[in-house]
Length: 90
Image (cartoon, rainbow, N blue to C red):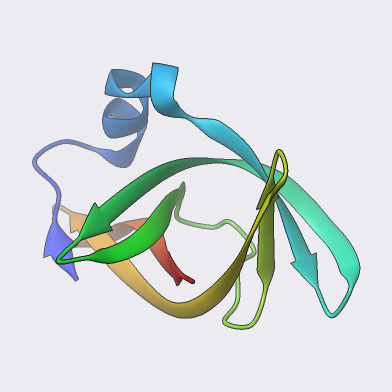
């Protein structure tokens, strides 16, 4: 978990040109489509979503022809409150 220098809404606005639509698939069933931001840290790929998105470990994330498996979740905060869900994928 890390502390954001700005709110998650501002962070997403700053990188709006990099946002992609991700379809969340759980146990083979479509759950939702949400905007996410592809990122990496220390060689680990993750996708950041606004806090409140319905994402769980074991979900599949699909964007275009790419399908990713959610292996771990972490959260970023702003002013002590959770703001982003970081879905570490493989």
